[in-house]
Amino acid sequence: MVLHRRIVFLFGLLALCWRAGGSENEYDEHSLVKLHPKTSSHLEAIKDLDNPEHGVQILKRSRTFDDTTDLLVPANRVQYVQAFAATHNITHDVRENYERTLESPERTPRRRMLRGFNIFEYHSYAEMQEYLDVLANKCPNIVKLQTLGNSYQGRKVRLVKLSSNHNAGNPVIFIDAGIHAREWVAPAMAMYLIQRLAIDPDAAKDLNGVDWYILPVVNPDGYEFTRSSKANRLWRKTRSKNANCFGVDGNRNYGFKWAVSGVSKNPCDKETYAGPKPFSEPETQMVKNALMEYGKRIKLYVSLHAYGQYLVYPWGYTGDYLPREWKKLDSLARMVSTAVQAAGGKPFRVMSAGKWYPAAGGSDDFAFGVVGVPYSYTMELTDGYEFTYPERLLKTVLPQFFEGFRAFGTQIRREFSPSRHKRDE
Ligand code: 0X9
Ligand code: ZN
Picture 1 (cartoon, rainbow, N blue to C red):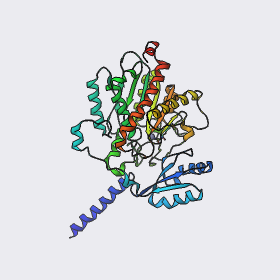
Picture 2: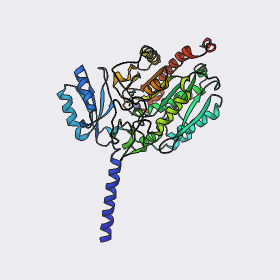
Picture 3: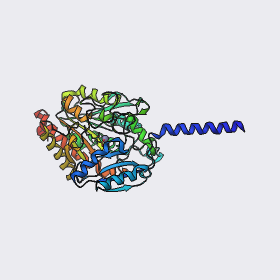
């Protein structure tokens, strides 16, 4: 009896410990609150929600009247946030038990494995890697894989280099995706781009005189973590350990104007912890090394994210001023947006990242400010479903976004390819 009681007691303790350890990652009992700013004083009031005292997580910011600011609010803070919105007269709506609407992470059903790789589905990191090997074997002249290193938890990170002539020294378009774990549509887009460029006969013209270097999942540890359970679906950061908490926001970790704005210095902040120092994460170091390696050959850098349908350019660390070349950055972004729209997609909101909201240590600023890449962007894919963009819609949107990438390619070819390629356009 005594022994039995002791066992029950021990189990009780263990259960407590496990919960305590895991609770940092859990999103149970949260509401999604959407604020609809209509005046500049609304926008001003909303800015203050960045202050951790409010106890909310900002999933998406808005600095314009045509967009919402989306907050993830613990159940016990919902009333407070509603009062905040009422005080400032801001229209808002609340979706309770938001976590229940998140899709269950699925162990790949057998049916799917037998069918082969479907590009219009969300896949595990391992499945994506396998598919890259398939493509590299199938199209060895076009697709080459370069291992950049290992993630914090030891996953191999590979860059996919697509070229019709790997020795030509063509201008390079460098694209990465998945620095933020929960933004699944970004790696899906990167994989789609890779597939189209590798096997679509029509893509020969996209590869003419321009090389595409694509890194489909920068943060595989975080990505797999978001697949591990419904409670972890909204994880954003890497999975390194700092103090007693996990993860660094990879897009606050780059070494240009590091931590001067829009970051948290608290390792337990779930969203924007900048890390103990610039490039503290193996994942951001790998991207940095690759950017440095191809240096001046890179003419366009695009970091794929979600969500909100924004296409933003430097500077990201400040909204006070723009780079000298901002008109070129702005006009290419608008061309891309027009191309996506012509393909039936939604247009992008185009502006500098810092005018949207200042946040330092982003990869776009590093590529532009340190590597000297003339065109550098962050592309926020999709709008309307937060981070859980439905799989069934991928076959509609990915081809639409592809047309935007074609527009990017056309401009890079026009501006930077040796003249012999131009007549083939
Ligand atoms: O805040 C970010 O890192 C990006 N948005 S997201 O919702 N995907 O997290 C925007 C980054 C824009 N660029 C910089 N601020 N440098
Ligand atoms: Zn992101």
